[in-house]
Amino acid sequence: MNTILENAKDIAINAGELIKSLYRINGIQSAEKQDHTLVTKADISSNEFIIDKIMKFYPNDGIISEESGTVFPPDKEYVWIIDPLDGTTNFSLGLHYWGVSIARLKHGQPDLAIIYFPLLGELYSAQMGHGARLNEKLLKLNIKESLHRNQIFTHCSRTQQLYNVTIKYKTRIFGSAAFDVCAVASGRAILAFNATPKIWDFAGSWVIIREAGGEIATLNGAEPFPLVPNHDYKDASYPLLATPSAIVFKYAKTHILPK
Ligand code: IPD
Ligand code: CA
Ligand code: CA
Image (spheres, helix red, strand yellow):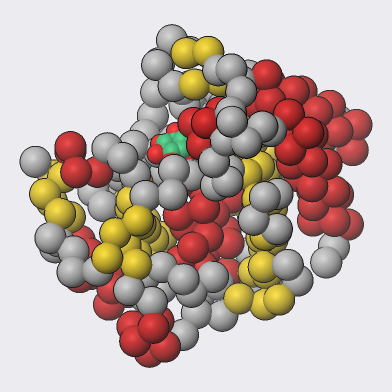
Protein backbone atom coordinates (compact mmCIF):
# COMPACT_ATOMS: atom_id res chain seq x y z
CA MET A 1 0.00 0.00 0.00
CA ASN A 2 1.39 3.43 -0.84
CA THR A 3 1.93 6.22 1.69
CA ILE A 4 -1.16 8.21 0.73
CA LEU A 5 -3.40 5.18 1.07
CA GLU A 6 -1.66 4.30 4.37
CA ASN A 7 -2.24 7.82 5.69
CA ALA A 8 -5.89 7.78 4.58
CA LYS A 9 -6.29 4.39 6.24
CA ASP A 10 -4.92 5.68 9.56
CA ILE A 11 -7.21 8.71 9.39
CA ALA A 12 -10.30 6.59 8.63
CA ILE A 13 -9.49 4.07 11.39
CA ASN A 14 -8.93 6.79 13.98
CA ALA A 15 -12.09 8.66 12.93
CA GLY A 16 -14.01 5.37 13.14
CA GLU A 17 -12.65 4.68 16.64
CA LEU A 18 -13.57 8.21 17.69
CA ILE A 19 -17.15 7.64 16.50
CA LYS A 20 -17.17 4.25 18.21
CA SER A 21 -16.30 5.91 21.52
CA LEU A 22 -19.58 7.86 21.21
CA TYR A 23 -21.63 4.84 20.14
CA ARG A 24 -24.29 3.54 22.53
CA ILE A 25 -26.30 0.37 22.00
CA ASN A 26 -29.48 2.26 22.93
CA GLY A 27 -28.63 5.17 20.63
CA ILE A 28 -27.49 8.76 21.00
CA GLN A 29 -29.19 12.08 20.47
CA SER A 30 -29.45 13.41 16.92
CA ALA A 31 -30.57 16.70 15.40
CA GLU A 32 -32.34 17.29 12.11
CA LYS A 33 -30.52 19.33 9.45
CA GLN A 34 -32.23 21.71 7.01
CA ASP A 35 -32.58 18.88 4.47
CA HIS A 36 -34.29 16.75 7.21
CA THR A 37 -31.37 14.28 7.42
CA LEU A 38 -29.80 13.60 10.82
CA VAL A 39 -26.57 14.76 12.36
CA THR A 40 -24.98 13.79 15.69
CA LYS A 41 -21.95 15.02 17.59
CA ALA A 42 -20.13 12.00 16.15
CA ASP A 43 -20.63 13.27 12.55
CA ILE A 44 -19.20 16.65 13.54
CA SER A 45 -16.28 15.33 15.60
CA SER A 46 -15.33 12.84 12.89
CA ASN A 47 -15.52 15.56 10.24
CA GLU A 48 -13.27 17.91 12.22
CA PHE A 49 -10.78 15.13 12.95
CA ILE A 50 -10.53 14.01 9.31
CA ILE A 51 -10.20 17.52 7.89
CA ASP A 52 -7.56 18.47 10.44
CA LYS A 53 -5.48 15.39 9.60
CA ILE A 54 -5.80 15.74 5.82
CA MET A 55 -4.82 19.39 6.01
CA LYS A 56 -1.75 18.48 8.10
CA PHE A 57 -0.63 15.83 5.61
CA TYR A 58 -1.72 17.55 2.39
CA PRO A 59 -2.13 21.31 2.94
CA ASN A 60 -2.33 22.05 -0.79
CA ASP A 61 -5.22 19.68 -1.48
CA GLY A 62 -8.89 20.67 -1.51
CA ILE A 63 -11.69 19.16 0.60
CA ILE A 64 -15.38 18.61 0.04
CA SER A 65 -17.46 17.16 2.86
CA GLU A 66 -21.09 16.43 3.63
CA GLU A 67 -20.82 18.35 6.90
CA SER A 68 -18.75 21.36 5.80
CA GLY A 69 -18.10 22.77 2.35
CA THR A 70 -20.00 21.12 -0.48
CA VAL A 71 -18.58 23.27 -3.31
CA PHE A 72 -15.98 21.54 -5.46
CA PRO A 73 -12.90 23.76 -5.14
CA PRO A 74 -11.31 25.03 -8.38
CA ASP A 75 -7.60 24.85 -9.29
CA LYS A 76 -6.85 21.77 -7.19
CA GLU A 77 -5.33 18.65 -8.68
CA TYR A 78 -6.37 16.62 -5.65
CA VAL A 79 -9.57 17.03 -3.67
CA TRP A 80 -10.59 14.81 -0.75
CA ILE A 81 -14.23 13.91 -0.46
CA ILE A 82 -15.47 12.94 2.96
CA ASP A 83 -18.53 11.35 4.45
CA PRO A 84 -17.45 11.47 8.11
CA LEU A 85 -20.24 9.12 9.17
CA ASP A 86 -22.33 7.22 6.65
CA GLY A 87 -25.33 5.58 8.24
CA THR A 88 -26.09 8.30 10.82
CA THR A 89 -29.65 7.06 11.39
CA ASN A 90 -28.33 3.59 12.22
CA PHE A 91 -25.64 5.04 14.47
CA SER A 92 -28.07 7.29 16.32
CA LEU A 93 -30.37 4.32 16.99
CA GLY A 94 -27.62 1.96 18.11
CA LEU A 95 -27.51 -0.17 14.96
CA HIS A 96 -24.25 -1.55 13.54
CA TYR A 97 -24.15 -0.56 9.87
CA TRP A 98 -22.26 2.75 9.75
CA GLY A 99 -18.80 3.82 8.69
CA VAL A 100 -16.37 6.45 7.55
CA SER A 101 -15.78 7.10 3.85
CA ILE A 102 -12.75 9.02 2.62
CA ALA A 103 -11.89 9.26 -1.07
CA ARG A 104 -9.42 11.34 -3.02
CA LEU A 105 -10.30 12.78 -6.41
CA LYS A 106 -7.65 13.48 -9.04
CA HIS A 107 -8.78 16.09 -11.54
CA GLY A 108 -12.34 15.50 -10.28
CA GLN A 109 -12.25 11.70 -10.75
CA PRO A 110 -12.24 9.23 -7.83
CA ASP A 111 -8.71 7.93 -7.50
CA LEU A 112 -8.32 6.28 -4.11
CA ALA A 113 -10.60 5.37 -1.24
CA ILE A 114 -10.83 4.02 2.28
CA ILE A 115 -14.11 2.98 3.88
CA TYR A 116 -14.09 1.73 7.46
CA PHE A 117 -16.98 0.07 9.33
CA PRO A 118 -15.71 -0.17 12.93
CA LEU A 119 -18.46 -2.37 14.40
CA LEU A 120 -18.31 -4.74 11.45
CA GLY A 121 -14.50 -4.93 11.56
CA GLU A 122 -14.31 -4.18 7.83
CA LEU A 123 -11.78 -1.88 6.22
CA TYR A 124 -12.08 -1.44 2.45
CA SER A 125 -9.28 0.20 0.50
CA ALA A 126 -8.63 0.76 -3.17
CA GLN A 127 -6.64 2.78 -5.61
CA MET A 128 -7.44 3.02 -9.32
CA GLY A 129 -5.30 0.49 -11.19
CA HIS A 130 -4.06 -1.21 -8.01
CA GLY A 131 -7.00 -3.36 -6.92
CA ALA A 132 -9.42 -3.24 -4.00
CA ARG A 133 -9.01 -4.90 -0.63
CA LEU A 134 -11.14 -5.88 2.32
CA ASN A 135 -8.94 -6.10 5.43
CA GLU A 136 -5.90 -6.53 3.12
CA LYS A 137 -7.52 -9.42 1.18
CA LEU A 138 -7.77 -8.68 -2.53
CA LEU A 139 -11.35 -8.46 -3.78
CA LYS A 140 -12.03 -10.09 -7.15
CA LEU A 141 -15.63 -10.50 -8.18
CA ASN A 142 -16.54 -13.67 -9.97
CA ILE A 143 -19.90 -13.26 -11.63
CA LYS A 144 -20.53 -16.99 -12.07
CA GLU A 145 -20.05 -17.58 -8.36
CA SER A 146 -22.08 -14.57 -7.35
CA LEU A 147 -24.98 -15.55 -9.59
CA HIS A 148 -25.21 -18.85 -7.78
CA ARG A 149 -24.37 -17.90 -4.23
CA ASN A 150 -25.41 -14.34 -3.57
CA GLN A 151 -28.97 -13.41 -4.17
CA ILE A 152 -29.31 -10.24 -2.16
CA PHE A 153 -30.61 -6.96 -3.55
CA THR A 154 -29.83 -4.09 -1.22
CA HIS A 155 -31.44 -0.70 -1.64
CA CYS A 156 -32.29 2.49 0.21
CA SER A 157 -35.54 3.26 2.01
CA ARG A 158 -36.68 5.65 -0.77
CA THR A 159 -36.41 3.10 -3.55
CA GLN A 160 -39.93 1.63 -3.32
CA GLN A 161 -41.42 5.11 -3.06
CA LEU A 162 -39.72 6.41 -6.22
CA TYR A 163 -39.33 3.29 -8.37
CA ASN A 164 -41.29 0.29 -9.57
CA VAL A 165 -39.07 -2.60 -8.58
CA THR A 166 -39.46 -6.11 -9.98
CA ILE A 167 -36.04 -7.48 -9.01
CA LYS A 168 -36.14 -11.22 -8.40
CA TYR A 169 -33.59 -11.29 -5.57
CA LYS A 170 -34.25 -11.09 -1.82
CA THR A 171 -34.09 -7.54 -0.48
CA ARG A 172 -32.19 -6.04 2.45
CA ILE A 173 -32.03 -2.43 3.63
CA PHE A 174 -28.77 -1.84 5.49
CA GLY A 175 -29.08 1.95 5.89
CA SER A 176 -25.62 2.90 4.64
CA ALA A 177 -25.08 3.72 0.97
CA ALA A 178 -21.36 3.02 1.37
CA PHE A 179 -22.03 -0.42 2.88
CA ASP A 180 -24.53 -1.27 0.12
CA VAL A 181 -21.88 -0.94 -2.57
CA CYS A 182 -19.22 -2.62 -0.43
CA ALA A 183 -21.63 -5.55 0.03
CA VAL A 184 -21.54 -6.01 -3.76
CA ALA A 185 -17.76 -5.43 -3.98
CA SER A 186 -17.21 -8.14 -1.36
CA GLY A 187 -19.45 -10.62 -3.19
CA ARG A 188 -22.25 -10.72 -0.61
CA ALA A 189 -24.92 -8.83 -2.55
CA ILE A 190 -25.69 -9.08 -6.23
CA LEU A 191 -27.25 -5.64 -6.57
CA ALA A 192 -27.13 -2.34 -4.71
CA PHE A 193 -29.41 0.53 -5.60
CA ASN A 194 -29.61 3.92 -3.91
CA ALA A 195 -32.22 6.34 -5.24
CA THR A 196 -30.81 9.67 -4.03
CA PRO A 197 -27.22 9.41 -2.80
CA LYS A 198 -24.92 12.44 -2.90
CA ILE A 199 -21.35 12.35 -4.15
CA TRP A 200 -19.83 11.85 -0.65
CA ASP A 201 -22.09 8.80 -0.23
CA PHE A 202 -20.44 6.98 -3.13
CA ALA A 203 -17.11 8.58 -4.21
CA GLY A 204 -15.27 6.02 -2.07
CA SER A 205 -17.30 2.95 -2.93
CA TRP A 206 -17.04 3.95 -6.63
CA VAL A 207 -13.29 3.18 -6.54
CA ILE A 208 -13.71 0.07 -4.42
CA ILE A 209 -16.28 -1.68 -6.59
CA ARG A 210 -14.58 -0.75 -9.87
CA GLU A 211 -11.27 -2.09 -8.60
CA ALA A 212 -13.02 -5.24 -7.36
CA GLY A 213 -14.12 -5.81 -10.97
CA GLY A 214 -17.74 -4.70 -10.58
CA GLU A 215 -19.91 -2.11 -12.28
CA ILE A 216 -21.19 1.15 -10.86
CA ALA A 217 -23.13 3.81 -12.74
CA THR A 218 -26.29 5.85 -12.55
CA LEU A 219 -29.59 4.43 -13.68
CA ASN A 220 -30.38 7.50 -15.79
CA GLY A 221 -27.01 7.77 -17.53
CA ALA A 222 -25.95 10.92 -15.62
CA GLU A 223 -22.17 11.04 -15.13
CA PRO A 224 -21.33 12.30 -11.64
CA PHE A 225 -17.60 12.51 -12.37
CA PRO A 226 -15.50 14.50 -13.08
CA LEU A 227 -16.83 16.99 -10.54
CA VAL A 228 -17.21 20.52 -11.85
CA PRO A 229 -15.14 23.31 -10.26
CA ASN A 230 -17.19 25.82 -8.23
CA HIS A 231 -20.31 23.66 -8.42
CA ASP A 232 -22.17 23.20 -5.14
CA TYR A 233 -23.00 19.50 -4.68
CA LYS A 234 -25.22 20.03 -1.62
CA ASP A 235 -28.42 19.13 -3.47
CA ALA A 236 -27.07 16.96 -6.30
CA SER A 237 -28.16 13.33 -6.06
CA TYR A 238 -27.77 10.39 -8.44
CA PRO A 239 -29.75 7.14 -8.77
CA LEU A 240 -26.87 4.75 -8.28
CA LEU A 241 -26.65 1.11 -9.22
CA ALA A 242 -23.79 -1.25 -8.39
CA THR A 243 -23.49 -4.84 -9.59
CA PRO A 244 -20.79 -7.50 -10.02
CA SER A 245 -21.12 -7.48 -13.82
CA ALA A 246 -22.53 -5.76 -16.91
CA ILE A 247 -25.09 -8.58 -17.34
CA VAL A 248 -26.60 -8.00 -13.90
CA PHE A 249 -26.47 -4.25 -14.48
CA LYS A 250 -28.49 -4.65 -17.68
CA TYR A 251 -31.02 -6.86 -15.90
CA ALA A 252 -31.38 -4.34 -13.04
CA LYS A 253 -31.89 -1.39 -15.40
CA THR A 254 -35.00 -2.99 -16.83
CA HIS A 255 -36.36 -3.99 -13.40
CA ILE A 256 -35.94 -0.72 -11.49
CA LEU A 257 -38.12 1.80 -13.31
CA PRO A 258 -38.92 5.38 -12.21
CA LYS A 259 -42.56 5.83 -11.16
C1 IPD B 1 -27.30 8.28 4.06
C2 IPD B 1 -27.18 6.77 4.11
C3 IPD B 1 -28.45 6.13 3.61
C4 IPD B 1 -28.78 6.57 2.19
C5 IPD B 1 -28.88 8.08 2.14
C6 IPD B 1 -27.60 8.73 2.66
P1 IPD B 1 -25.86 9.60 5.91
O1 IPD B 1 -26.09 8.89 4.46
O2 IPD B 1 -26.10 6.34 3.33
O3 IPD B 1 -28.31 4.73 3.60
O4 IPD B 1 -29.99 6.01 1.80
O5 IPD B 1 -29.09 8.49 0.78
O6 IPD B 1 -27.75 10.14 2.65
O7 IPD B 1 -26.79 10.76 6.00
O8 IPD B 1 -26.12 8.58 6.94
O9 IPD B 1 -24.41 10.00 5.82
CA1 CA C 1 -23.80 9.33 3.72
CA1 CA D 1 -22.88 11.37 6.63
